[in-house]
Amino acid sequence: QVQLVESGGGVVQPGRSLRLSCAASGFTFSSYGMHWVRQAPGKGLEWVAVMWYNGTYKYYADSVKGRFTISRDNSKNTLYLQMNSLRVEDTAVYYCARDRSKGVYGLDVWGQGTTVTVSS
Amino acid sequence: DIQMTQSPSSLSASVGDRVTITCQASQDISDYLNWYQQKPGKAPKLLIYDASTLETGVPSRFSGSGSGTHFTFTISSLQPEDIATYYCQQFDDLLTFGGGTKVEIK
Image 1: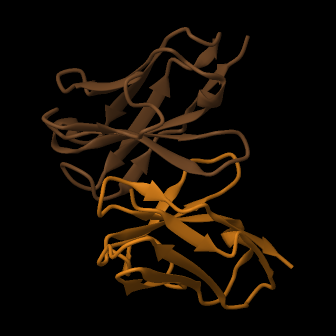
Image 2: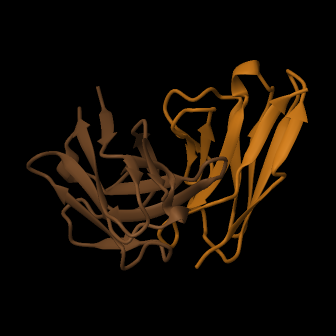
Image 3: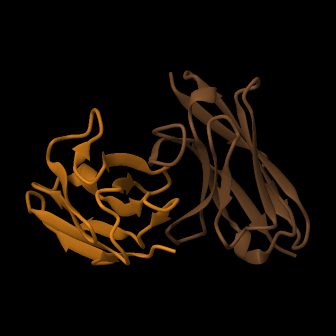
């Protein structure tokens, strides 16, 4: 079945780095845009980043631009999020999600989320 | 950046009630709007895309309408399993979510 499984979350000190992974299965990964969305404790959903199906385009929320990098390996059916210079306000559950299309149309498949806690 | 304003932020209704949530975009987004349901501790689920198209497998008591800047999400007859937070999301310019509406049973 169609599935996304995130990993790599944990507790990290402010200023440090973390890399999240999202393993996809059950669909042709290379045909879909892929996103990261986060949710701070008790808060709403915040879109973080998107990468086009072939890696041609990638865009970021202003809150993470210059610190986070989205990437994908279509040969491994895996999406990544490299998070550098982490801040306390980056604490959240991070979801990997599939777009309905090759680019940006909406999120029809979601992973279960991985928790990132930034704390000293 | 496009801002999405959802209202109300929470509501309480009885089983069988008609529930309506509104979402206002800060600029014209045509019908580039989706609605999601998120149950506690779970990932969001896409319910409606392109403002009014029901995702496969979603019960017909859920519906969406609107275009331009004003959108409406309706549950025609609230069921206990509909307890969740609902989010609108625009995709005219990347993605932006509304603040969410928490739906509870009275």
